[in-house]
Length: 430
Ligand code: UGA
Image 1: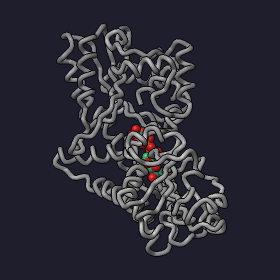
Image 2: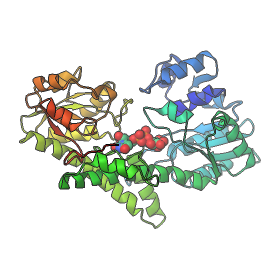
Image 3: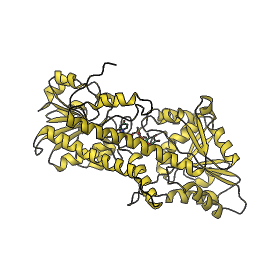
């Protein structure tokens, strides 16, 4: 989030220095080497470096000199009880307070529990010289991995939690290019801004768990979740987005933020029961996928399954909380041999999976397999040569965990089709 935010704000015309304590990372970035895969990011970083608006540094005090606005975009990893660990935010806030050279607006952009921004403000005031000019704002980010630049540059809204006019005006100025394209803005208090982020992510996660439960019902009664979701989505109060049934949500946000919301509610003496159920349904969904594949191959021991897609979603190499990793591990635990393929995430997956065999392409993953499971819907998997797959596989079974294929087409090509929530293919003549 930090790198994308820095590069995009530079692209808006602001001079930006991105700071990280990891010197090796800063070195590589200065050489235009990206630390992760994100479409369009190398070009954006290179352009802004070349035009002198973007710099990288591991020296925070120097970078702070002359900067009026400081965005904090740090990780808030989950603790054992699911709550977010915000220590890094406070450490950096203290450092900033000790290195003030004039007024600073500190924008807390990391996803952190409600109350963090105000606590950061208090911490900074304590650590700074008396009378130093400090404002703290909360400015949650809604970008999505895999389309991070597009979603940063064209957000549905900008949320600004700011309690002084100076802070709100500065943020409005920074985001001015977004207002020119008529992006709605919500200016509110710190706590409200912080809660908006958790509420939005938890609601989207809930939509996914909801449709996954409907998918399971569809399987039981012979209905098609694709058609159910389509018709539900036609009701504008429901909306069609985030109603795609699948192997469960993953990534660095939904799993962590839903847990953090539950933990935060508990700390307030409350229960977030809907979100608790969302988490439980998601964990169950991932396990169900392993059972689904195992059922498709019969007895698991000695069988081979090809797994297509390891990242938690397409267009990223991020494998954090990726359903694919849990599925691969679950299959292996049952004695299934797995050959996996992903267009970009294999190096990262290798670090997490150890002894799994990786294929050079889709067809190598399918060779001799008793089933081929599509776990991440990369575009490259949408138009596979089904006849070739049938010839290569020991038993031609396609477990399409993202429902990207037409079951009739797959079966016409001589493969058995297993989807999610597609008890019996429905008809939609829209
Ligand atoms: C999510 C939110 O969508 C962003 O708005 C937010 O800024 C971000 O978290 C964050 O908090 O930083 P992200 O995790 O990058 O973004 O990816 P999503 O596109 O939301 O996908 C999350 C997971 O849900 C993926 O595993 C995806 O496959 C799954 N998903 C999504 C479904 O299973 N079904 C759907 O219909 C949509």
